[in-house]
Image (cartoon, rainbow, N blue to C red; front, top):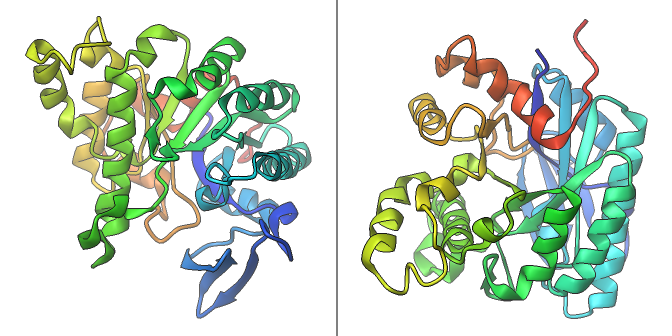
Length: 332
């Protein structure tokens, strides 16, 4: 059995320092601090700015392999200067590819693409496909106020489908513009899973997954609020003209096309997710290095009692299959 953690964030050295898209990072009172474009983020509780140390640290949680992804706030998908956005994506992709090259058989990565220009993003995907170690891209759950099922993004999705690259859809942490989510850490605990659900439901009902049958799309945090909404989506699609205006097939079949990570913080919810989505649709995640992540992601999966056949699939076999990984055993 190989254990692979597909939800691990880093900041690569190429994005650290002085400049409009570079961050300053340091530690205060046991927390990592990222200062970037006027934002000060203090939610990291584990190493994140030394990718090699991250690979080793995730290994100590029991993972043989790790799939790295950018800190989502530093994806330049809202940048008005598309040329600059392309340069930032290139820095991410080059930096992540270098990390993967230093850890063959142990580290892979989701790169970045300038999604505000879908045609250019499609060309970036072609470059990503050529870079050893990069197995797809991470994208924010919305860009320019558009959910990801919008026809605006079709050139990007067409390229991802044709190239066989995975897309990791991550919420932005924006709080959805809802004032109440600014209180009590709700922007994270509630806002993030709702943001994921909104864009994923949009992708389903727009017919996107029906149109591109080979797409591999991974949703973090157990799909957020999406699994709890499956009945409402199914019911609306059964009678409401707007809800069924694009999707011709079955809602549940499309929902089960997504891959869901294990960051649910509740073993019962994880077990129910596996039972509903299917044992081949759930992959291990930790959400390293953040305070809402799982300190012991492998132990958490084992606590859910998934069974001798399903547990190895969730811990690593599914990730190996869908991402085409060749994992070296890091634990003898």
